[in-house]
Length: 258
Image (cartoon, rainbow, N blue to C red; front, side, top):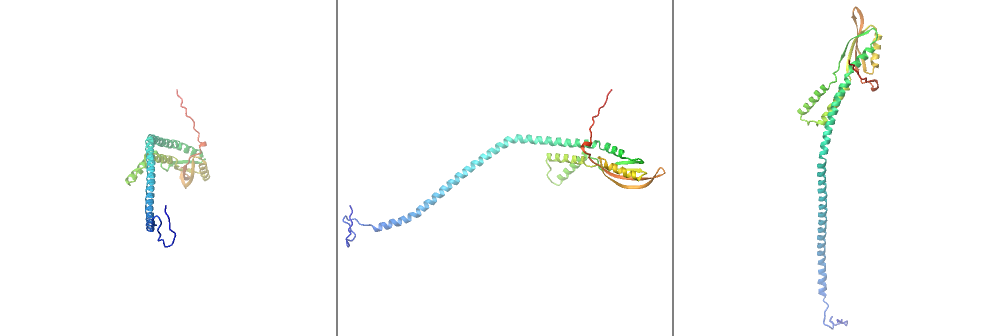
């Protein structure tokens, strides 16, 4: 049991002989102040360790996701390799057929061109008018000419160091050029004689009204002597045109046999 003497002049002594250690209290307080910096250092290190651990875990999770995506991509590439090869083969067959159809169509469209033109010219010819020549003035639509032009274009590109187009692209371009040539108008010249200038005007109007002929122009008209008579020699320039589909009739050809 500790007793404290409250009487003045007692010198701070207790009856049990114990003393109050003021210096110890001061040293403990100073030590407590030094421990604050230690606690701060420990807390900082702990935060750094926790943050590093979280970043490491996050990077590991991200790496696992990327590895899984790579694995799936490799599997998809392997699985669809056969499908892509079949797709390229089908596209090559399609482009080849498109090119062949284009060539056949170009030949078929121009096969009956001149029979139609000559029939229209003959039907439009008025009385007292006769023709001396009908001449084609434009290059004929030909797939051979298109092939030559395509080969020359590829040779020029190769000489210039440009990359050659892919086979599918080249076939598609060639087929389009064939169809473009086939659909191009054919220009021709008509030279004839007439004894009536009004008949020439009627002839031009009838030709222009034809669904197979367009752009009829009179380029020359002179007075000449034919078999001792003065006649008007004329020269017309015209172009063919594609008529509306409803004007074209396809009739089967039956060949009889014995």
